[in-house]
Length: 426
Image (spheres, rainbow, N blue to C red):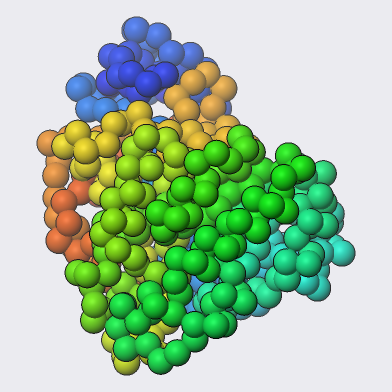
């Protein structure tokens, strides 16, 4: 046994004062009293599983002014996240064995936390899907256009789902229907008109198509960044192999409070207060499975332009867990639901040995002092974009973060070097 960690540990839905034994980066035992040569006693602080963010855009390669794997994983680490999964709409797009290999190689040299990568599916690379599955952690399909997105036609969906099911990898969907979006194109001057041009019916139609095409499939399917109550209602009776996620920005913001802000221009768009409340209720009652940041940074200068030409996307990997830890402290969401949505369900979807404090899992922890409230200040964050839509919001940041038994963050300082993070494999 290499180390022991002691505190109020989250185990099987409850907090227990106990010790965690760690050997070779894995949890080896959990007992009331344990001692190793290296013993960390956190007293009455909470010992939670570190977060797993299944949806980040680290812009690497191609857009180093916005973000790269170094700055993005640094931000993740300070937010209590031990593992991230990067989307394929980079430049070049991650759609071939070569681009997957190059991204993994580059991230291995830069990353502070563990990571995985998705392969983007297009109409042109389905024929290579089996080979891609041997290299990636899962697939991403864009049913509608978004930032540097990849074209995919519904006519290929049934074939793709069959091949993905055989690969035993998950597939994640951007669920907005392209034909529907094309009917609503127009000049955008604010959040309200952006919403008008990406109406809920486009999300609803995309989800209907996913449900119809996957009726006979056991493929692991995840619908990303759910944004509408209509989409939520469609998913209430879904099969157990289909999950859905929601972002903090779709839970915290509504169109009536953000009319003029390019900084909250996202795809899918910020919707009504009713949608926001329904999504939060869906998260609290378990209809929504997963919390995901959809961390998609652009520089301040890129966002501070006329609305119609401003890019869509907001940062969020560093603030997700702290925002919801504050809500859990205030009894606005149960700790059990938060940890399920940001630790356990993501680990299950991606098939990794993280997200739980149990024997055999990676020793990935976020140490939380609930007294340690703060206001989010972009000057203290670590993304290259240097701004946050959650500026001034209350949060509880971790005081210490462990990844594979190693202290990653302590006393607001990084304790490891670039390249510490590992590719979580396939």
